[in-house]
Length: 396
Ligand SMILES: [Fe+2]
Image (tube, rainbow, N blue to C red):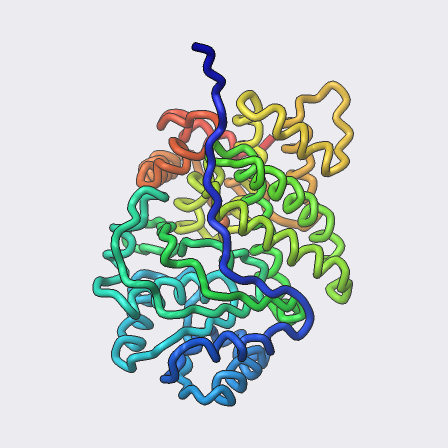
């Protein structure tokens, strides 16, 4: 019998995304579909200070709902921090959550919505869902969660949430279909007041989501195409917007690219860049996106032998002149140049990592082996994890 090996894949998509100017107003018609009660609006102080919660608050109250506001969601929310929001939502009996903010707010809101209608603690969520796609379990649907991004995290279209465990010096990405928001209302203008630094960080993170999704063992033909467009949109628009924050075209392109990158990582999950990055950014003073982009060239070079075609396709989409260079080398160089152009650290040494720290980082990286074993296109055994850290220490 002749057999032909066919690819198999799955696709996790958001339920509803509305993109464009003034789309937050459409929240009203989605609230009209749920039972009355108290809505919990989760956000952070920066977003409140920028006046971005006011439209959502008004829509909720005009629609006849009582309103409770949690405005203290921390960046890179901890297990304990999210538990505080869960306790409050349970105590007050909230019927829905509106998250206005970036990835940290949205991630905290996803777990809060899930535990708002289920038993268990945030630590339980990490235990149940912190090991990739594999551990779905019977649960009641989450409280309806509506998101209004003020950042380009892409978290709004991903059925996962990241929480930090400061004690273990790492973060956990918890995956469950229960965590996909009910609807997202993405107005690029809402990112205008985001601190430039944070926007840059989220965009760099999204770029690495696209980069990792492109070559992931879990990729599908659909996510590959999205990954190439996402990476190209971000690669082109980010330096333009960084130089001129009033460039509306660049802002829209960046928002689109980051949304696409969210769709990619929401299906493929992240790979070795994130596997190496979590322990570093949990311990050293470097943000997630900056740490990822710093590590990206090292990982791309390592993966080159396993993803030549994918990297060639991306290099072409980015308009890189390759000559005799391997596509991975051309890409790695272009990423380093992007990093330099943005004035960011390009080596681990620049953020205080020394060779003495590497054994500890390797141990922390082993807590999230699935990045390396299930998603990365080339196997990354423990000894290679240390090798990659050593290479990123000095850069190339
Ligand atoms: Fe990330």
